[in-house]
Image (cartoon, helix red, strand yellow):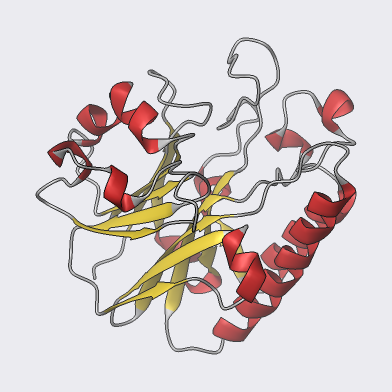
Length: 255
């Protein structure tokens, strides 16, 4: 089973850059897209609705920021929109496709700009709620794959310039500690199960991939029961569709 996760910086712009043309060659079972920058109703062209997929969208109320989408090759039993965090669901977006024994989720965590204490506090509160939710669903008789832009780099290996970025949101000690606790309590960073290279980055904030400011903030977080089902992982960097690169993961799983 192949799952691709991609933070688009605006879906229409990514499409103009050739994202959907590339996607046709990938034979993915799921495509999880974050930061749509538009509503589903803005997407009138057929390219946004590939014939082999069942697409589901969760838009922000303004239709311009945050939205997420999940494309499923196999029709899901159910779709869950949002996490039930009331106001926080408008800042961090989540949509989930449920099958018999597994759920695939698409997450866009809240962003906090450097120096914005209010945004940072809201982001931290969202992660506290998310952590509680993820521990609660561990009791369900199913496995989880949660893909997306988590807006956090976990370890120094996930940031190209650790000295410059050590005081920035996304690489703060408390954010990294939250990821530590997540991976110590029932979840796994799927990409790191098969790739330990230090130069594997998925996001370049300034859009310059040669400028020495790469981050890895795009994760597939899987429940521990799937730890040994990870077959392959790669970050596609040949062509640029946004400031983020698609993350491609293969799992030894059948729906």
